Image (tube, rainbow, N blue to C red):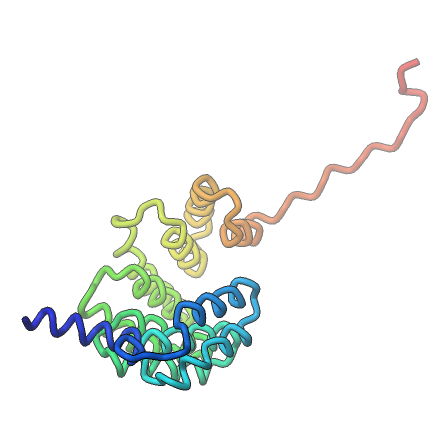
Length: 225
C-alpha cells in the first residue's frame, strides 16, 4: 500500500497536476513542439512552447527540469538555476535536478557551489557517472587536476572504453603535464571514435602539425624526354 501511494505521488510530481485533471492543453503536443524547436537550435522558442503548460502547472517537476535545461542552452543561467532549484525542491531526492543544477553553476563559474551539489549525490551514489565526470571538470577548472584525476580513476574500471571518461582522463593528464600519457589516451579515443573533436583538438595542441617539406624548384633539364 505504501509503495502504491508513493508511486502515485511521484507521478503527480513528475507530470504536475495534469496527471489527474482535465485540460485543453495537450502535454504531449507541447513537449513535441518544444523538442522540435530544440533540435533546430531555437532554444528561445523551445522554451516559449512550454509556456501553456507552465502557466497551468508551475510546480510540475518535469516542466521545471525541462525549462532549466532550455534556459541553460539559451544562456539565461540565472533563470536556469531557479528552475532547477524548484525541481530539486519538488523532488529533493532526485539526481536529475541536482545534476541539472550544476550546469548553470558551472556556466556562472560558481564552482564551489557546484562541487557541494555533486558531493551530495556522491554520498549516496559514489560511482555516479555524470556526478563524477562533472566533479572532475569542476576540480580541474579550480586548478586541482590531481584531485580531478583521482575522481576519474573511480570510473575507469567501470567504463574503460567510454570516450567521455577517457577524455576527462586525458584532459587531467594534460593539466598535470603528463603529455606522453595523454597522447596515448587521446590516440585510443580516436580509435574508438575517429571523429572525436575533443581528442583531435587536444592532439593538435600536443603534437603541432609538421610543416610540409619544401618543394624543389622545377628543373626542365631533369625532366624525362
